[in-house]
Length: 218
Image (cartoon, rainbow, N blue to C red; front, side):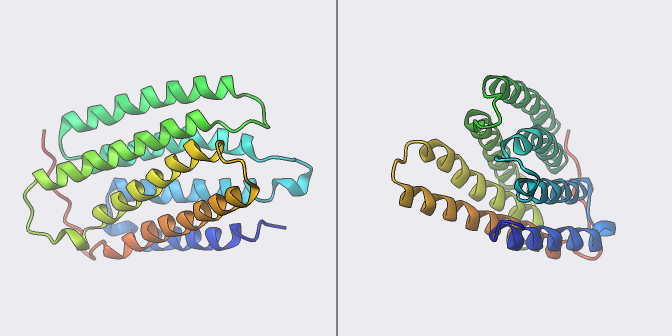
């Protein structure tokens, strides 16, 4: 059986995939990749939350495999969201550095019973940085479009919110000794997952029927 908290998450992610497919013809490469990210996340969460049925005690290894894929996909998404060439180059190099650090951290914490908290913190910091850079670029780029109805704004907002909470979770969780406090922290993390993927799913609805892609600046 699935973890009871996993089913709502899988439903939300599946809804996001369906909305992304509906809007596929009107979206650009960035949001095409968001759909791929959601599919990979759905498969990962499904395996991670059902693996105990096959005799495995922990699902840590599943997430250790997922993390580098997530880093690549997020970096690719922001590569296409950025309009300035120098920012695209930054996204590539940031991805490479994050993958190196993540690999080193995974090797150090190779045991299936040990969470790769340093690696997770590294990738969260990367996503926060990439989203903040995109916010800055949006403010510097003149546009007549209302930012509130811009799907990129909501996607970046979701990324910044979720991974800011996530990084605080991983930094503080191991320092919490009381079981009740740890359970509360886990619940907050679970509901933040719901919020994040809900916003990502709903951002597809803001993609206009005839999507006018912004000019790319060199």
